[in-house]
Image 1 (cartoon, rainbow, N blue to C red):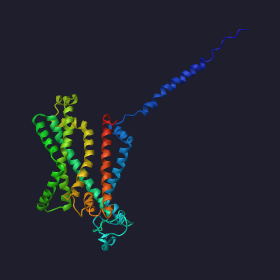
Image 2 (image 1 turned 90 degrees about the vertical axis):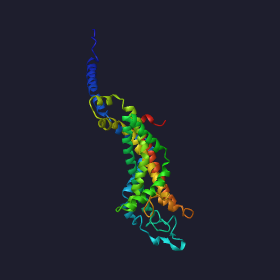
Image 3 (image 1 turned 180 degrees about the vertical axis):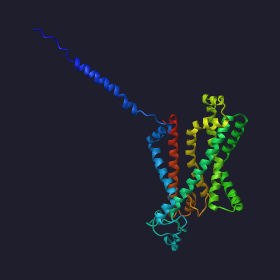
Image 4 (image 1 turned 180 degrees about the horizontal axis):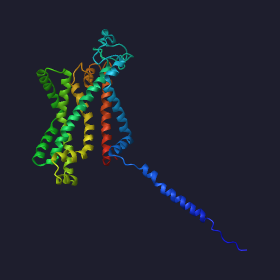
Length: 346
């Protein structure tokens, strides 16, 4: 008896084919759902998070910003203000040096007290951070805005306008800035304080420092923006805007400016630590914020006469200034690499 071959596997193969087809029809959906478009800001943030140094710098920067922003609260928790002297914490028999070791560090004074004055070091430190960050941020904002406007005008209009503005930029970049700031700050401060009838001396000092730093710092941003605009003004989207009858204001601020946010943010981020160092140097030299107003540079200046006896008074503001400038510099480098991945360091 002959046995007919059975079509074994035919039904199974058909079933498998149907199931595979069904799986394949449903498979791409989760993958497509998982693939989502990301904005340039999200991609930049992802690159910044992968950089451990930049992420650590961001954390340190946020800590300093919070300490400066909430300096009155932190000072009240400790119990001392920036100009409230604790005469019981210094010993007149030892030349008004603090009682105790490490500059008088105790539960009442977390970082000790200043010799001679009895000022609390912790309160003066956090208020000094607020002063430095306020001056540096204000100067960075003003100089960036001014530099962007000048750079846009020079790069777009060209001709005599570009030649004149470029000449002004070259002059500002050629100035020995720190020397001129040192010379101009006390003159302007005295002139303003003589003719004004309102405001405190601290407000006048801070305003003068902000204006002078901004007046010398805008040229760097302007030169950067001008170079970018020179390459963008011949692009097709700018020609299309001209053909459609758009005015120069629309082209500058609606067409060109949105394509310049990356270099502008980089310039702004790198200007802040430079301004902090400049402001601290001015206060250290006695032409910036002067005592009793709290400032890191003024604290370093006051500590120079005591560092041989106890280096604590110089180490505390010095380390704080080093950390904040270093963190902001590393953060600025990280922002530059995140916004411009083609310029990443090898």
